[in-house]
Length: 103
Image 1 (spheres, helix red, strand yellow):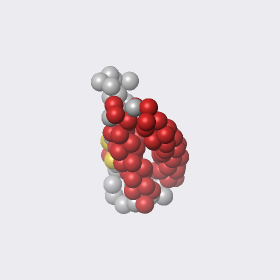
Image 2 (tube, rainbow, N blue to C red):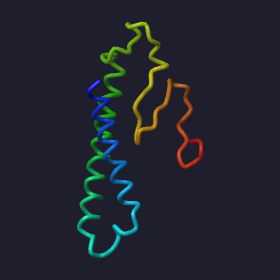
Image 3 (cartoon, rainbow, N blue to C red):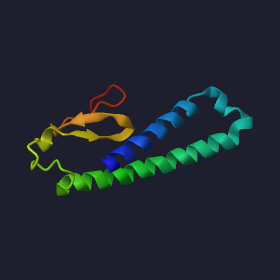
């Protein structure tokens, strides 16, 4: 749906910025303005993802996105969008691994 597409689009741009921020050449004094601009854009995008995820979660709770069991699919097995493009299935209680560690 449109909300999921928005989340994916913002996460894609964040990934692009992260790749640019990983380039050591960006940290040269002559590129300080570019670095500052990218860091500010990334912070804004992170806030957008948080907001959009909140909207998506609200829709999930309210069952208004077509995955409320009315269409024959089990909502516990729905693929959910999560930060930085990682996807999880269901609500097993297990948290996704971050930096190689189970939360």
